[in-house]
Amino acid sequence: MENQNGNSKLKAIVAILAILLVGSLVYIFKLTSDAKTMETTVVETKSEKEAVLKDLETLKATYDAALAENSLMTDDLIEERAKVEKLIAELKTAKGDAASLRKYKEQYKQLEGKMKNLMQEVEVLKAQNQNLTTNLDSTKVVLEDSKKYNQVLVGQNEELAKTVEKGQKLSVTNLKTAAYKQRSSGKQVETDKASRADILQISFTIAENAIAKSGDKVYYVQVIDAKNNVLGDKATISFGETSLTYSFTTTVNYENKTVNVKEQLPGKDFAKGTYFVNVFDKGELVSKSSFSLR
Image (cartoon, rainbow, N blue to C red; front, top):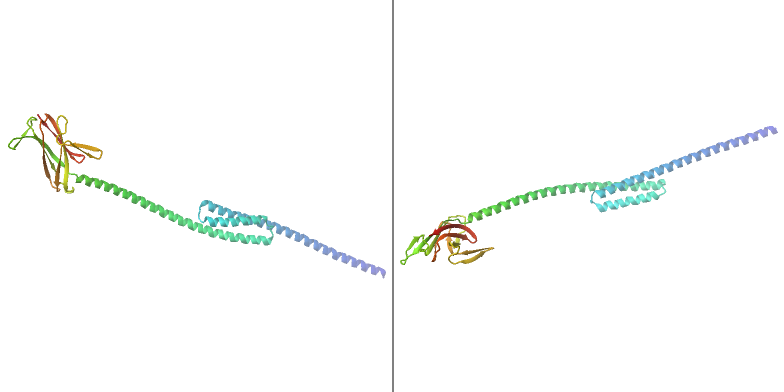
């Protein structure tokens, strides 16, 4: 009877030990599984943190490139880049638990969306600027062409003005000079002897010109004798930097028709030799000739 009771107690103790052993094994297994799960979670969390940091660095690099490329929307780009830099600094010092990591991921998504919107706006502005540049270039080409055309017109107008001015100038032709002896009766007898001459008669013709200005025309006649003396008035007049000593002037009422001009220059003791006669329109020599007295 006692043996049976002892065996029963022993079996009970063995059963209890077995139950405790199984419980211990289950508890150890659970601890091991939890540790592995925690380790895996830490590794995954660290990997995700690095991934988010890498994405934020890429986001920052995008802003850096955009700012370096152009000055469009500079203030907005700088402001958003500052937000990215701030989030990078916070994430680097964060503990890296799942809850905070989710928060940083959400903030990254918001910043990424903002960046995409800004980049789209920048591209639109770049396209608009390119169109403006193209239009400005086209306008510049048109202006340059207009400028060249205007220069051509100015040149043509100047040439036309010169042509008109040249065409308006009167042509003085048939300049002739003859010496005469004035008799007491008033009759004038032509002579080629210096000792007999007491009048020089100068004549010339002003040709018809339809486009010339009509009105009084003043011509300066210069007669130089064989001794290189200017005869007559010997008056001097200046035209700009040019001065002219002339023998007499003649004023012609010109009405765009041919006009014959005849003037006489009295004198005495004319020298033998060759004489030169010049007709000036202001300071411009318009006709010349010569004659001789013996």
